[in-house]
Image (cartoon, rainbow, N blue to C red; front, side, top):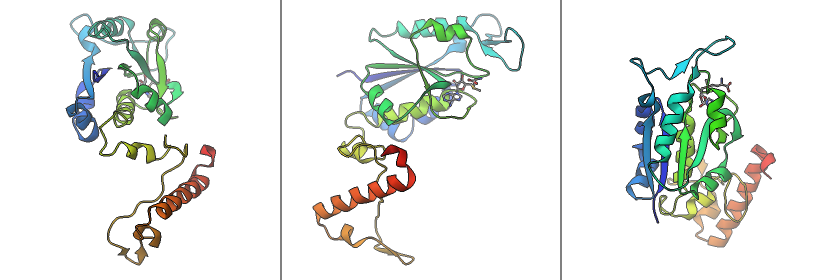
Length: 231
Ligand SMILES: C[S@@+](CC[C@H](N)C(=O)[O-])C[C@H]1O[C@@H](n2cnc3c(N)ncnc32)[C@H](O)[C@@H]1O
């Protein structure tokens, strides 16, 4: 199977590559299940200054991303591979990213993500392509790069063989495992006692069925206390 191709269009490729070159995103690339392609859409801008932004019609604060360089860059990147791309526009106005979306995106052949900056996009950029508009939360970032990295990280750790045990992604919070959306149970490692706090007896018992029962109870309790909306 071909690796998932992820294209990220950004004005700050160095910011993005720094994160992709560490930890799980890097391991996923080294295992050959994903490939990353970063494109600076300033390279597609005209003129000595290669301006990618301009003042808004109608006045107001801030600058707006111009359509020409973005259209050129997107078309150039799309033509680089014949697989159909799922196109993600990073915007605080999009649908909220969650674990189910990460799972859906991990099943695509190709993702193309466009990172905005300044006041955002000229509306024709939105209209010009079939975007899946995604927000990573109800707050405003300075640019889409952190959003694209959040999505990339959440997606690539779901690709087969990336995590040590494939099940570990299923047991995570918001799990996609058999018990549905629950926050994960508490974890413990050695020592058995630390500053008066001890590891629950059941986890030391080696009794797998009892441990599984305890973990499920804890996950339900935790979800009830912290995120009852998930139940
Ligand atoms: C300063 S923001 C522009 C916000 C825009 N003026 C608005 O109110 O919708 C610049 C860029 O950061 C990115 N961005 C900001 N917040 C985001 C969020 N919560 N999720 C995804 N992308 C975000 C988008 O790419 C956006 O175009």
